[in-house]
Amino acid sequence: MKTHRTLALGIVLSLLPLGACGAASAQEPVAAPSSLPPWTPGTLDIHQLNTGQGNAAFFLLPDGTTLLVDAGDVGARIPYADAVPDASRSAAERIARYIRTMDPRGAAAGLDYALLTHFHGDHMGFVEDDQPAGITELARRLPIDTLIDRGFPDYAYPAPIEHPGMVHYRRFVEARRAEGLAVERFQPGRADQLVLRHQPDTYPTFAIRNLAANGEVWTGQGDGTRRTFPALDATPKVDWPSENMCSLAFRLGYGAFAYYTGGDLPSLPDPGTPPWWAVEEALAEVVGPVDVHVVSHHGSIDPASPRFLAALKPRVHILPAWAPSHPAPVVLKRLLNERIYPGPRDIFATQIREPTRHVIGPRIDKLAADHGHIVVRVPPGGGEFMVYVLGEGEGYPVLAVHGPYLTGLATGLATGLATGLESAP
Image (tube, rainbow, N blue to C red; front, side, top):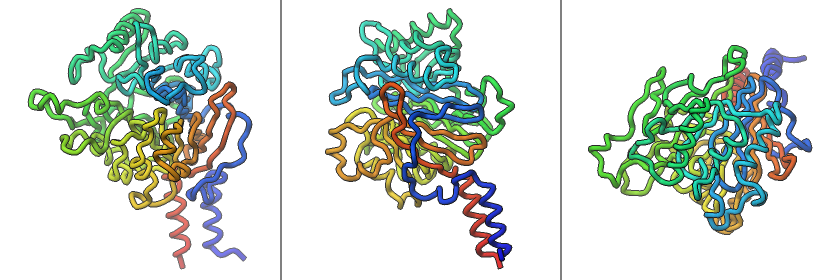
């Protein structure tokens, strides 16, 4: 005969997503389909792409709204950083082909939003001889409705940006604006700049909160922000913020699911530098716990401080690695350290290069994936999510499937209710 405690616990578990029992423990790959099941309305898909040439993430939001964050292309500039799977196509062409495959509109696919986290070639594309690359080439291959960056319209913070790639990009912006492209400056604090375009009322629990750009950080209250960088006229030029420090950051929420990405923001800048250079440290409290954390700066030496990780407590880390310096051994060590925050965590990297393996050693074997397109899929309601690892070749075969993972809020609910029921008389 069932006790009241057992019956009540069964009711709690029946309300959780299918497969959620035990989902808070370390995940093993489950049986994988040959290809990623098609996106369906109400589903949130986040694709961290692996071109081997820089950052690119494609979002297919619950109502079909599309967003691309970055379109990096370093070409052949970095040793031991060949294009993936090969150099027969540019990064922009590979990104466009991938989006057309994953977007249910197929050949008619386009982007509602394209967002550049900052103005480095591995995020926007390196330009040579004024030839399109990265975002400017991608715009020739896919229509873009709205382009958002950190600098429009003057591109003058902390000083005018005048390198050849920026000159090319500004000409591109002005030419495309004349043809109808909407261009906006990313505005920290807002939750109404990146919105669902097609059926927003159908998915009221979806929102993207702009967290930071150019040293302006959301306060956590309303749309309020605060300046974390000092006035430039009172700051030695050697201490002015770098391009990485000016990166955009946002938090995406869908039901109980939460996700964070922040370009190349640093947490632990070089010793002796001003404390305000630690931009992620300023963000830690307002980001709060998330389920998925995209490791800033590709896991190079300065992101993901202990304080920042302890605030976010991610179940899944995505390492958008592409160069031999990604990730730095000390950063991987911090991501794996359960003294910083307890509990299991899985780390998915887009591309671990052979030199990186030799430097890091056996710890690299703790990754859940060491190459591939990493797809986070959140079904309607946001109570759980899956992670798919896809091959980079034609057809994007599924290499592994991990999950289901309970989202943080659902995990807390299940744990709290189960603990309360077990302790009940």
